Amino acid sequence: VNLAPSHIKKHGAGLDLAIAAGVLVADKQLPAHSIADLGMAGELGLDGSVQPVPGMIIIAAASGGGQFLAPVGSRAEVSLVRPGEVRLIGSLAELVHACTGDGPAPALAESREGDVAERSLLEFADVRGQPMARFAVEVAAAGGHHLLLIGPPGAGKTMLASRLCSLLPDLCDADALVTTRIHSAAGLPLPPGGLVRSPPFRAPHHSASTAALIGGGGASTRPGEVSLAHGGVLFLDELGEFNVAVLEALRQPLEEGRIRVSRLLGPRIMPARFQLVAATNPCPCGYLKAAGSCRCGSAAVSRYLRRLSGPLLDRFDLRIQVEPPDPHLLLGRGDEETTAQVATRVAGVRRMAADRGVRCNADIPPERIDEFAPLTASGRARLLESLDRGDLTGRGVHRVRLVARTLSDLSGGPRELDAEVLDSAIGVRVLPSSMASEHAS
Image (cartoon, rainbow, N blue to C red; front, side, top):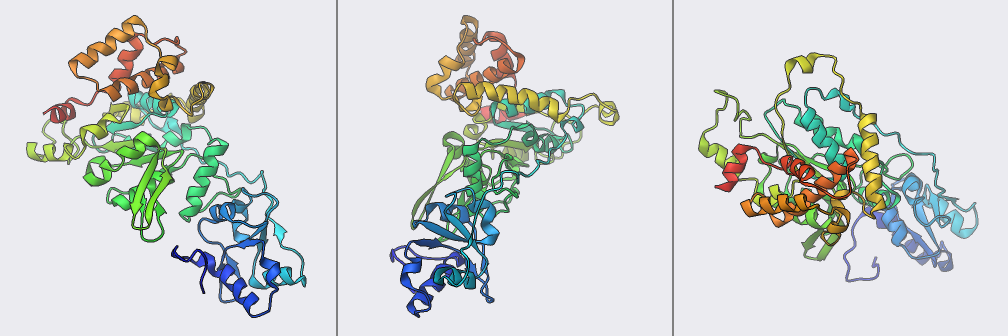
């Protein structure tokens, strides 16, 4: 069996249905004109049933022909594209009956707008005794800023990070469709309505390879974790345990919002606009600041911290030291704000960003920073002072202004950024003394 174009290697069970239709035409069981303007894809079972394959929404959107036949099990995703042109079949017999006129036409894949999965939100009020860390998570959610949490084991870093997605608004139509296509291509389960509306939360293990994180594989390039997190959050727990090459591979997608994967058959460009949240211990044992508790020698601490390069750390807009909470606050009733209360403020800042023509404040481009984050005289002097001392890089100045924009939006501050709000933005960017001295040396 040969499928044109012949120079592209064919693979995957999705070709089963089309091959079977071609065999039936060659055997005179189907008239050739009945499938002349018809696209189709699906895997055939031994009983003749037609099963879904990964990426059905992409195949249906890219297929030519007046109509497209898809497996019944793919109804939710294929109904999002080519409305009125996608029909559903459950078996090869249904295809034959429809093409020969011996049976009814396959049903249309009509979208059901009501099939929207209810979001499972984690309660932010469960995080107690961490006012600074809670505020940093709120700022990160409101402005789309990358966040690094540094602290000993059990301080609540993972708990904080896992609740960030609960503070984010639903994806817009464009982002939801792109994210749905990525998840479909990767073979991930889709919600009942087919469209992924909730921001994804991906948390790969620190043993993940470079290909698993950025994408790759053999003849079929599979989306990596950075693409699966598109529109949502990529959480890297135990950041210091990741392979150095894996971490350095994040630098391009963090800057461009997409990843270029070069393989033998040519380059592949995949969406990868995500919010990076990471958690790390200050040393291998995690108790660097606790008197008499740290079991690591200076050489071990140095090796551990040097796995995190300066360019990677510079891409974190917020770098927060998370200390163990006060036991009385941890075991008390607490009066922390709920997820709904914080999410309302986050949504307000996101609407301001949308009025500026961007998804979030972190997406404001350098050429428009003076328009959306103008400086007062005191603010400009404060940044010049930090640059002269070497506390900020050129990228750092831009990112500090974006964080200051978010802080001002959250507090209802003025349009122009003064020294006070810039001091606050610089304050949440400062590395802990142990890490700062190690990278300075």
